[in-house]
Length: 281
Image 1 (cartoon, helix red, strand yellow):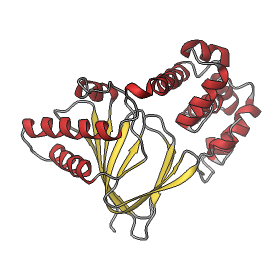
Image 2 (cartoon, one colour):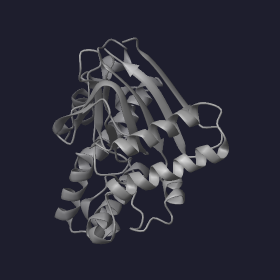
Image 3 (cartoon, one colour):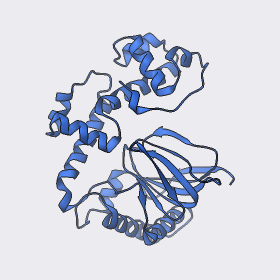
């Protein structure tokens, strides 16, 4: 299969990014999206490292990754995989699903969804947003596809209020850590944001993001240190700027995330390796 990829935004439907791609040897390292990622597998099979296990999504299935879920992406068949992806902003979902009878939650039960009818709707919508199509067609397909997707596979609703509240609390923690990543944030501080106990908070956050809050914070700090090193900052200065205790604290976490030391990275004398969340401290 010939590899290609195209990433674009719809000129008239705000709040969705689109990807059309085929990959054979290429693989994604561990990452996450702030948006809800939904796609249709058109050929072959995609594999994911997801929530501590491996998942395979074959041709004809829908892949659904909730916001901020760490995952990878790789070929799970000899011929690779071809697919189309949507990255939906929460504002677009909320507006489109404002009349959803079970209330709104921006999460889906995934990461594999077997639903031929919704698959066809999503594929038709993606194609309509790629080519010159009537506005009515784009809007109608968007509404129908999202309503059916969430009605059948939404992870929320009247009977799951507690779970939805926990998920919302996890998102609040995630956003708070994004905004305060330089600080040495305390667990009690996060518990006060959500109303959850400290144990409940850790358990819910790890279930949702496959990382504990402290692992997530260290990953944010380490990612920012990488950006500063790329800009030419010295490792010690980068460590202190990002709120690490000292250079050695940055050193061991940077090596665990990227497979090289900050000093080697700064000199560009390295081979980068993927992120492994289980060893972050």
